[in-house]
Image 1 (tube, rainbow, N blue to C red):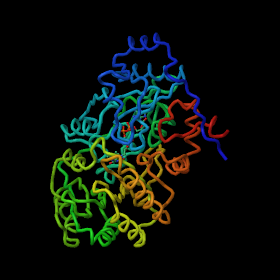
Image 2 (cartoon, rainbow, N blue to C red):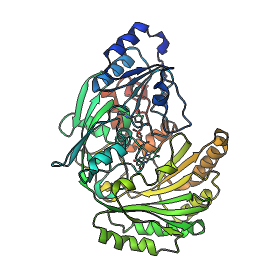
Image 3 (spheres, protein in one colour):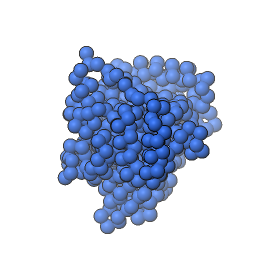
Image 4 (cartoon, rainbow, N blue to C red):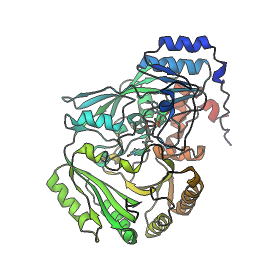
Length: 467
Ligand SMILES: Cc1cc2nc3c(=O)[nH]c(=O)nc-3n(C[C@H](O)[C@H](O)[C@H](O)COP(=O)(O)OP(=O)(O)OC[C@H]3O[C@@H](n4cnc5c(N)ncnc54)[C@H](O)[C@@H]3O)c2cc1C
């Protein structure tokens, strides 16, 4: 039996004030302490269930600020958290006590239209990035909520409306600048530190603080997107239709099936998707979706890509209480569909959504150099997005999700997308990295033998893992 890591960390209160003041004088960005005006907004993340108080926050403005933070944490054995967009449901972007490096000031985005590439600093969100890239008619695969961070999403893989046409976000990563645990600034690409580059493409924030990423972009113009809403009574038929449709869907179309509650309080189900490419061809593909059943509403229409990228975000506001369970299903049999719909019909919160996603297309092809992201088979990914407002409703919502999760287990593949994992224990972390886990442990042992970067879906270095 492998031993779990023992945390032996120094309380930050034992830091001499002189060390803190010296740090402040050397930073280009800000040093925030509890009580400072900007401290509260900096420590907050998207999931309102997470309420942590770092002892110190570095709001980094430069890569050198990040180096100062990494060196401070390592030299004084402090718990260290790194916040990109702060969207991860687990809350790993923020710690109690310890040091938080908040990257939100680092948002520079430079797009080169000729090479169709972009260099993006890691405080940028997908909304920031898409806006600048779309000025030149370009985009790369990114998350479907514009407030999500480019950093965390890409480091875990990255799926979105372009995934079937252009691969995962991490497949489009060309180069990264990384501050490693020993405080060095290194570059990772197919040519430099290729092992680290492999690990950054799906291994999460385990290997260092990434300060910049260079991406491949693609021409993306007006898309056809939106949703077609059906009454909940037809949900099982609709999901069966979705399952069969995805067997022949072109790569230009990424389509999800969502069980949700309409704004006027009716349980409904939706086909939610985006077609990128020739609009006339797109219309002919979407015609089949429009003709299924008798929709309550058909809101699929041409729109700018940036509109598509923020279409559903009002449903997932920052500060609500979120608890998720997720995993790839080994089958989407009729029995699995029954379990999914029957459980969704008992959902206690009108804000919760039960989503089935299917990637595939170009995302099935591992790019040159390979990626730590593993799951490139055409499995349906079930994401139960528990979402409610009031703390007093925690128990009923969490109990519903856990029960749902239990009942779907016979259909679960033991594979999970790392970016949608909560704090669910080391066995589930291993489900995320799968057969790459041992290789990732070796890489972790090389780049972070002391496990400085542990506030993540943690790959334990061999000093811990093998003891
Ligand atoms: C509403 C919502 C919608 C989502 N939609 C999608 C989607 O469409 N597609 C998809 O693939 N995923 C999606 N996700 C999941 C998303 O990919 C993860 O939550 C991701 O971690 C968010 O990135 P972030 O930078 O905002 O995360 P954060 O919470 O800031 O960080 C997540 C993890 O990455 C680490 N990290 C962050 N920045 C860095 C860095 N620069 N260097 C090293 N480590 C770092 C953090 O320490 C933490 O462990 C969604 C999540 C939410 C909440």
